[in-house]
Image (cartoon, rainbow, N blue to C red):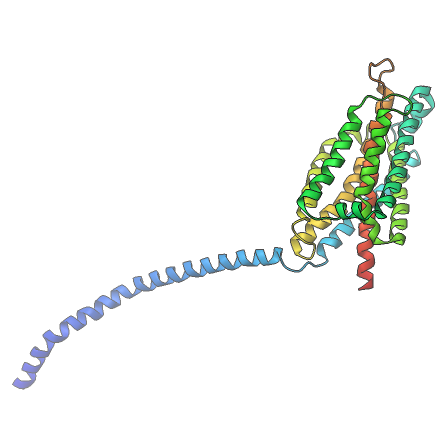
Amino acid sequence: MLITTICRVSVAPSLQPLRTRCLSMKQCSPKIQIVRCFTNDSRNTFSERLARRRSLKEKLLAPAGETAFNIGKGAVAGGAALGLGALCFYGLGLSKQTGAIDHATFWPEYVKQRIRDTYMYFGGSIVVTAASAAAALRSPRVMSLVTKNSFGAIALSFAALIGTNVIVQSIPYQKGFGVKQMAWLAHSAVLGAFIAPICFVGGPVLIRAAWYTAGVVGGLSTVAVCAPSEKFLMMGGPLAIGLGVVFASSLGTMFLPPSTALGAGLYAISMYGGLLLFSGFLLYDTQRIIKLAEVYPINSARPYDPVNASISIYLDTVNIFIRIAMILAGSGSNRRK
């Protein structure tokens, strides 16, 4: 009994630190677990964020699907339906307001002559551009220059286009064949050489694109003439914003191939969005030409310039043709696959 009591007393002090340590561990264990859980949560959150960043990058650079192109095709189909509806609405005279075609009967002869001269230069620009593209296609040096992807060749091409355009519009207009007309021919020829590589898509595609372009331009011009005189003149601001978006997308396609998801989206904006944009520009520019021919003063020091007036619808038509040809070429290659 005494021995048992002595053993308990002697053992008790030695177990006391152990009990104290266990008790302290029990008291501190919830805090340790909370700290550990918080640390694990922060690590998991960081890893999830990193995974999201990687997944976003992977999505942008992933192989392109058909989503962007299907959206673009749907937008173009919707625009075509809207244009056809507008053609029927304004062409049948269902609008309560009068259009330019209603005012044409009361136009003075000089207004009719201005519009006639403008569209004569427009048709001449199309013919010169087509002839220049055909001639450039037969010249290895010209094709080597316009097909190069180097920065110098691209800068030279853009400088030639912008430079000839600025020169044409800065020269005062005079009747007959003079310096203005020579600069106009040079500008149309340079643009024809610039778009000559589009001939590589093939003759049948180009013929179809030309017919489609003629239908689009003719239909939109009819809508602009039959619509109220200033119906589309209020679209200048939105069209300018859209032009910036399409231009930025076109620049982006130079660095991101359409085989990636981001590149496909930019390409769709440039092609399908550009087709809708320049169709809107054609409506705007057609009514602007008519308005300018009506209100431009007869006795102005600088006469009415049909060359400058025709450049806007000429560039709209060229951009529409290029995009239709590229879309047709792309759809043809997809069918062959």
